[in-house]
Length: 281
Length: 355
Image (cartoon, rainbow over all chains, first blue to last red; front, side):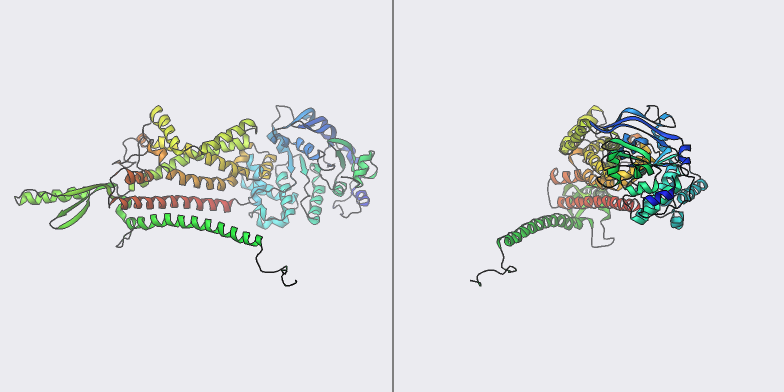
């Protein structure tokens, strides 16, 4: 599936910036990186996820879509165990394997896991520190303090997040002095500074205006050559524009999971069709 | 007919508008009463106290009052003139007279004196004692209080146990200070055998302000956005790294605000220290100790206790008011200085860690 076909099926603006990639073939080449099998998840007594099974391929963008409360964010937060922060949250049954390692095994180091599975949040949350400090935060935690190394990572990450040209002259100003869209890209830069394998994005554009959104989407396209990206969105055009595969959730169940094109053009499930065509949700 | 009807924008007051006016006045008068009472209290202390602390001749500040220990005042007449002297000056004066008389071969002159305890000298040891008590107890209260607030807010599993602990802490805030004094006396002074000492006073005062410190620190921690914690954890920080680098710096201004209230309370309480740390009078200053360890186990003089002593434990006369109000004035000044320092520090931190 190529970016161009996508553009044609979703006439609502946005030209993907990257050149054509060999269509179809590459999604076959990419191996499964995250393998979720029969996952049941509870908040206290409430079952939030019912028997979820899905395989997320490497170096592609996978979108989770669905109406509010369908469990898509919950599932995303299972992937780096952010749900551990909630006392009453628990995985009841099933496994999540990343590179064949079950991340819910008791001997898994959550800290190491989160270094490899970065996350960008719905509300941009730069620390009230300088741009430079924001980006070096993760590395400093790991004990890196050599200035040359930090400088290099700051430049690489900011370039990676398409923010370098805008902020290179004010790296020591507060991250909060940036605009909303820039702040979100700063958060992406902060996440890629620790060189994760996977980047989870939880509705990264929901608080941004259309232009800032376009820039972040552009960035997602660029990032997928290096990273595996899982994005939660309730903006269906966004899923159509920037994802390779799409999973549709409804009421805590995975309804349909397929190539983005298939989901939007010829979904096999009636609920999916109703949702992507805007009849509910 | 038309003329008796009111125009809708008429200025004639309706019932509701009259009530509105009355309510505003009730509230305004209540505020004024408080204002007047406050001004009266401060005005009285400042007016009477400044007569002790300040003077009309150079250096305009009564240096002796701020740098000397309390002394007994001797009032006597000699060769037609009346004298007011502190005890050490008086003894030197009398010895001088006796030597003069002996040299001249006369009998020593008999001076008819009246003495008034604590009415001469100053309150320097009390200032020192109060500052030591505040610093020590706030150090203890802040380290224990912030530690437990971090535990309760960041680590402990929120449930009935934690709720019960919070309730217990809140209730502790309602315990009268004299009860803390009694507890400190039984626990530290008697059972631990610390005697009446700085250490016993520190812990007693610290326990008294702990509820305030814990509650306010928890509020300050809660005010730090959840996004900071999540952002930090998602980058592979441990919980403690997150707290240290992404939570605590931003909670510090709030914690300091609470400790400012704590300082005023610690400095001002008399009841908790009267059995545990305060001496009515002590000749030595706190640093005049033989071994360093003795520093912790010595009692001190303190400003609020001194006010209590000079106001109720000595015969009242025309000289005692001077020292009462002078001490109160100095006391207010000290509290104001400590509080201002904390507020400046707090504001500086706040502007540095703004979000």
